[in-house]
Image 1 (cartoon, rainbow, N blue to C red):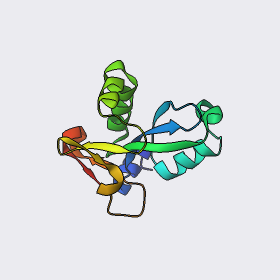
Image 2 (cartoon, helix red, strand yellow; image 1 turned 60 degrees about the vertical axis):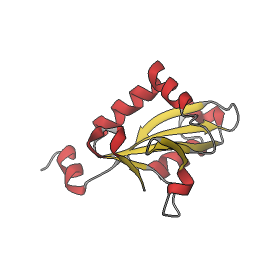
Image 3 (cartoon, one colour; image 1 turned 90 degrees about the horizontal axis):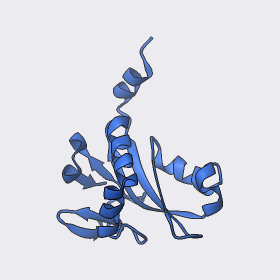
Image 4 (cartoon, rainbow, N blue to C red; image 1 turned 45 degrees about the vertical axis):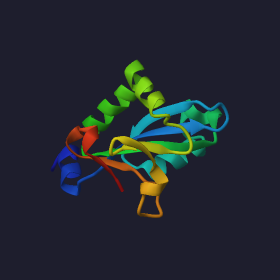
Length: 132
């Protein structure tokens, strides 16, 4: 029987790093997941202990990765002092913006679908990200 990791590679699963903002206290929450839509619903339904008392939450920013390891590495970076500085310099707060093509752009303006836009980062390099 194939391992879970092999099954995921065969299915080509995506992994996300996301940043939420609490409308109650204005603070950010940083996490990673395989399914951004379900995870956001879980946060807003009170199913996540760390954000239960901070609801409602809005999605500010997300990045898409091809492996869990790359997503978790980016999550750890955002939670570090340097990562928080990176987010603050780019004013990652509502309304959602991304650093794309060397400049800040509205993430909603760059999205071509009706769903929440996200970045796809190939090779784990943020510079190679593109909006979907």
